[in-house]
Image (cartoon, rainbow, N blue to C red; front, side, top):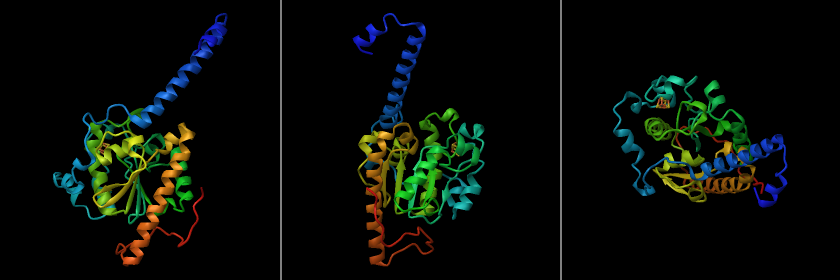
Length: 279
Ligand code: SF4
């Protein structure tokens, strides 16, 4: 609020003051949420280099539980759906395992179920999910072509950020899903998913526009669709991220075709040989 604004409010009625303060608080809250989307609060207390993260197989090897030996996603679901290893298990409506093609080349990973996802037991079904569907369409993919999951399988109360302890407890399930699906590319949606997956505390700004290696799988990082709903100004850079993804994916498909390599039981995605990208 500038000097001019203060002068103009000098003789304002309490109603005008209340409106002004409400508008100020709304702006401040939106600003803080934007900053949190990009930079977070405290997730990892020490800055770890990406190269120091433990390999997924090493993490899973330390876990002596039956689900680690699951050979299919269905088996993994059956073995984990009643999990109560962290307090979120007691407050969930549904365990939100994941959805999509079990042989997908592309996995989209968000942070945690929200209200709609908790009610329906499926990731990305609310407004953010509808936006994700549109993003998929824009790069010539269908929801059923890809696999969609979250770092956490249960909803944090009030949609708060996941706690580090919750992510550390739940992430091994996701690692096992990745091991079974064997995607070629993972898109981490938002800062929290990227930080948990890549084991870093770098900000979203630092993490975007790079390609990471996750045990032989390419990883790209972009905005969470919910953040795009809150801040439509980020849709343009998000679109740039998705164009980069599509280009990389086409290169991977092309080299797989040239080498005659594909997964033995692969059924999708179903892509046209040639397609144009909207700019
Ligand atoms: S969030 Fe993950 S670890 Fe916690 S209860 Fe749910 S499934 Fe288990």
